[in-house]
Length: 367
Image (cartoon, rainbow, N blue to C red; front, top):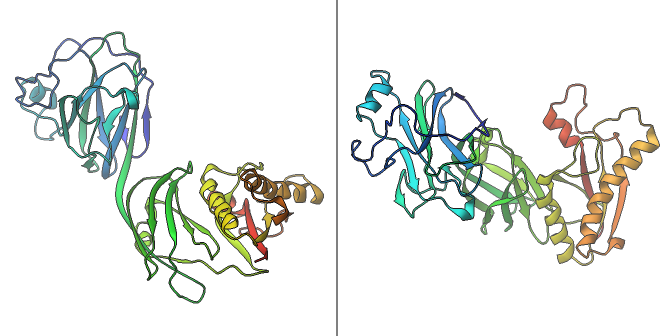
């Protein structure tokens, strides 16, 4: 199979037996990181089409299945099958530990793992990712210790370690001490940090290619902001400058990532951290009153009144979230602006830009 990004395989049929030959032997290969013997094994040939840190998840069809794996690198100078049969090749990565019921028997390569090789017995469930280069070939063998398994699913992806650095200031370029959270597209918090008295912060984490992430900034006395990022922004991630303006009556603020599903009043999961920060801001500042303003990405056949109501309903969905958490609804007004204040004209806007059109903004009414 070709590996050039996020690749999913399966769910497969359950492997049955080891085939005509049992190529793996802990004793003959002279390593602790080999199957004692093959039970129910499946082989995969991986053709690498891009360079980076390769990781993968092996997900059993049922948590009682106990999958071990070994990952071999093929050499252009020798025949892999001959070398394997003669026990002249050892794995680059392996995990032979028992299955972990608390993680549903999953195993694989993961950026948070600490070991390249995991031995038999009670040990870690994952090994560290491996750096692969375009044009290389690898062989992955999985072995389910138990018969009558339920197959498995493989998820391959590239995940790179990153150092995110930035400075937070107010509108007058004075440093701000603020809380920062790194979240994924589901709204899950991955990392938490705080800027120092100079407004500087650092976050060490890992990002997957092609996936979207958000940096969410919060300070009690300034407005909140969210910046969308991805791994392709690697240069920018080392010099992020964020302005958190102080709250002022009559000012209108763009939050940065409270966006909506197209044609819907449902906000995207990645918007939840920003809405939570808005909730914290209102809870902290009891005199703060706001107007939430909804926007659309153009219109279909709807008339003016329909598109205004639709975007007001988007604003209402955010108000409802806040009032469900005991924020007094009298502190929140809503307004629909339809398609009159789009950030990007849809005739030449990218999908990401159209998503930014589907947004809400916040105006401070009282502070």
